Length: 156
Image (cartoon, rainbow, N blue to C red; front, side, top):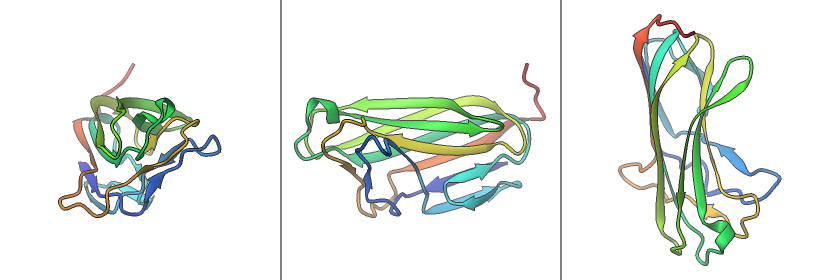
């Protein structure tokens, strides 16, 4: 059982405001095998309890004239069962103007059937300028996957 997603052309920038400091990533193309379901292209339902290997990579372009507060980009993998729980987080810092910056994460986590998986990206709420998204690169530079490693495994 696995699911993969690529591309983020549905968004053009990451909001840089305290009203919406993070953005759940909507993926352009999603392929699922073995019972994964989703209502939108940004939240996916776990088909079977067990241990999953989760990976994600997200690329954005830093502001043209970054200030000290603008320099962080972070990516988070979330699991939601009865409450939203952070599974993994990755961050990257740069002072380079208009640089391609990538955050990547990977790890093994236990997930129960029916829980949901999503990814979000954020910059500091105090950022003066938004980070932008590369326009339709080929191949896509942002992607994720979740692969069931141990079906029916238990978690204590």
